[in-house]
Length: 295
Image (cartoon, rainbow, N blue to C red; front, side, top):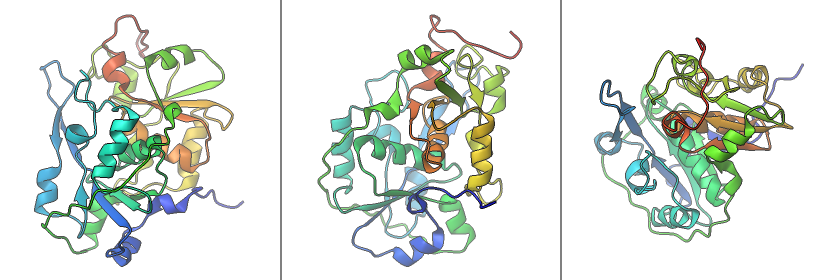
């Protein structure tokens, strides 16, 4: 039996390829790192820290920084990381140098989900020539590759939005999908959050009927690289996802879910969407149903 392969290998680039491609005039490399710190007892799920300071200490040569919270999220929202409207988002990407003819490579530190969030956002505005650095900055450093401290700012570009509105959804579509056999809902959070043992986001538990495929379970523990397409595909199949279903993925704030969504897309699932505000919204809306293991 032949091994399963990811459908678009160009969307996952290796460190060796990137090292050999630095200097390409069309290449746009971005550090997308954000850090989340637990804030137990504050009523908030976490404190957000930009990865800019780490970027300034050391980054892949020629890479610029994308600040998800400060520059690429809706500052008027009461939720962290809410998606801006598509025209605003396309304009901000263009200001960062992403446009027609650009080849974008996204990387992050510790958690690949920050890179996949930006990848999914680029796909949302209709930009398709983007890739994730497999293993991110951690793998780059582990291999002894060079870094620099000089900040890179790419010249502004032109990016015309061709929106895919269907790949981000809100609570109404999620609620409507509960009990619908045509839909499969996947929770990308850790098992203790899925079961309801951890009340980080408010009311503990999950969207009723959803199945747990933690984003971290799809990453190799030591190398921080993506697991094989065979392993990832089996996890989604076991969760009940199928190519004929509308697959809705959520997490705490729409970040970890994009790692699952990215890999579902790589496995050629044609109808995948991310619930943008995820449990940060759902768990704090008393009108919405919630399910937990001990209920």
